[in-house]
Amino acid sequence: MVYRYYCYIMVREADKTQVNVRLDGELVAEVDELVRSGRFSSKTEAFSEALRLLIKAHKGGALASRMDEIREGTGAYPSLTDALEASREEEEEPFG
Image 1 (spheres, rainbow, N blue to C red):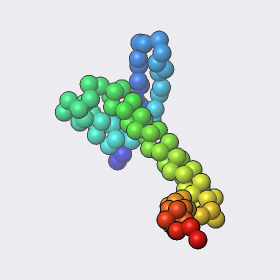
Image 2: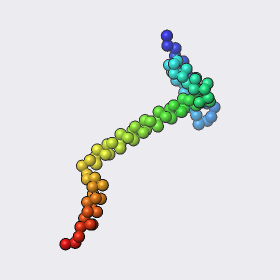
Image 3: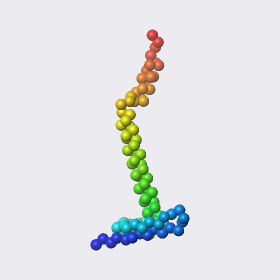
């Protein structure tokens, strides 16, 4: 049988928002262990860090996708390295 727990994140600070989340019991047990082991001082801290990492990973993935799109769009242009090498070769050619 899988138990589900409600996690009530209660924060007294004015710039924080209370969020009610339904979580799998095994996940809550893992977070409880992280708090018990001293890795986090509270469930709120653990969940906040997890969400920060999730958002950071999502933004990083979106940025990587955008960079790939840009690279694909520049594939028709000559390589900057090739252009610089050609320029150097032209400079080294004797005047004729």
